Amino acid sequence: MQIYLPIAEISVNAFLLLGLGGLVGILSGMFGVGGGFLMTPLLFFIGIPPAVAVATEANVIVASSFSGVLAHFRRKNVDIKMGTVLMLGGLVGAFLGVAFFNYLKAMGQVDLLVKLSYVIFLGIVGGLMFIESFNAIRRSKKPGGAITQRKKRGWIDALPFKMRFRTSGLYISVIPPILVGIFVGILAAIMGVGGGFVMVPAMIYLLHMPTKVVIGTSLYQIIFVTAATTLMHATTNYTVDVALAVLLLVGGVIGAQVGTRLGSKMNGEQLRILLALMVLLVCGKLALDLLIQPVEIFSIGTGGH
Amino acid sequence: MLRLSLLLLLAAMPLRAEEVVLGLSQNRIAITANFDGSEILIFGAVKREEAIPDEPLEVIIAISGPSLPLTVRRKDRRFGIWVNVDSFHVDEAPSFYAVATSAGFNESISLLQDAVHKVSVAKAIHSTKEGIDYGDRRNFLDAIIRIREDNGLYQTLENAVEVDEQTLFRTNITLPSNLTEGDYTARILLTRGGEVVSQYTTSIDVRKVGIERFLFKLSREMPLIYGLMSLAIAIAAGWGASAAFRIFQRD
Image 1 (cartoon, rainbow over the protein chains, first blue to last red):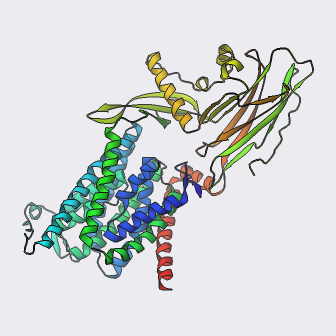
Image 2 (tube, rainbow over the protein chains, first blue to last red; image 1 turned 30 degrees about the horizontal axis):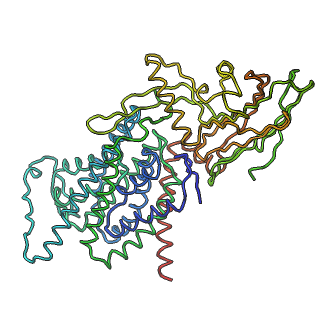
Image 3 (cartoon, helix red, strand yellow; image 1 turned 90 degrees about the vertical axis):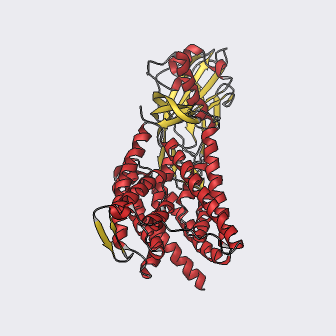
């Protein structure tokens, strides 16, 4: 069944979109990752213009994070104060990101920006994930292996503007969370991702937040930052396609439920290697597109000068 | 449904030796949610008061979409990766252009007449940009035609118009799914010996309709409302789907 997307202005098979949403949903349910960093490049591959893919995926993430955060609120796993500080940084970052995005769009380089960002981040995340799960499997075979040492808090404690975060049991400066927020906000605006894959490690290793509040707090701030990103893209670029968003979302929500059930029955570490390989595969495909001489070196953009 | 025959009959025209009486299978194309391209049948007859001249009659049918400015960009290798380096601005290029002829294109119309009447795809693109040498400019213009031909947006259909008894003519033109909405024009030119002897123009209305139209208009005219609505719809859909799945699981 073909469906004409009103904003992307192309006709796409609706089942393909539901299927893609479902596939990414299964993965995100299995691994507890947001699917943005996989979905956006897949949308490029099926011919959705990168600007539409990024803005629409931001809209999808708002909705999937919203469903996700409710469960964490029920279990009181959300540090609202920390989430709000991160969010303020995130809003600034999203604003900077969209401004940069629009600047490069006017110069005709936005596709390059988005694809390069993906190659770099997918490469780093996929590579780290692969090494980590590979080591974890080796450690589990060799009992009594190395215990990773926790870094001592140093420079972060020396920063001013300290604030107490009761839920996380922390008394730290607001500067690091704001900087983390800004960085993730920029990523959200440029790449159409929630940024959980950067936010979660930063919260654990940099801010030393307790692991149980990390996911809920990250989802809480992602909702606001991606919502702001969606609105900024919708009002400046007109690139949010609501029909595309709804199809991806319906597939994604159902996929996530299936994925959660599948994930609990399978060996986590080996699955994680599969996910890492998949991330690297998508990264490699995007990198090849940039490295190999394209068949058509010309492209047409509407309007502009 | 596509063959919804709406006959556009022609009223009195200025007195000429030969005139076109035209029919279109549809003069209105609706881009709906499941729009997957369309086919338009153009048919008509040549009305004449005198005997048929000796030179054979050729019929050229050109359909063009709204003309819009565009920028063509060319990639080159920089630091090992392919990035857009040069660009070329075009003032007006039709978003869709199909030209069908009853013989080969060059037999149907002379080069000079093509330049006057702007019939071929290449003549339909206007650019006033200076400061770029002719050869390179040609590369960019050729690229527009090549890319849009690949997308089915530009078509040169030789020997595609059937002409019977030098009087009745008909052709089919396929409109792809990635159409730009707007006022399309259909031009019919009658030629003899490469010279245009008569021409006739009518318009075809291509519009998004229903929900497509509503969403597109809202996104351009009230983008903030559209953005808020997108968020609300997405949250409701996500919530609804997970609630529905939970109910479905319980049963």
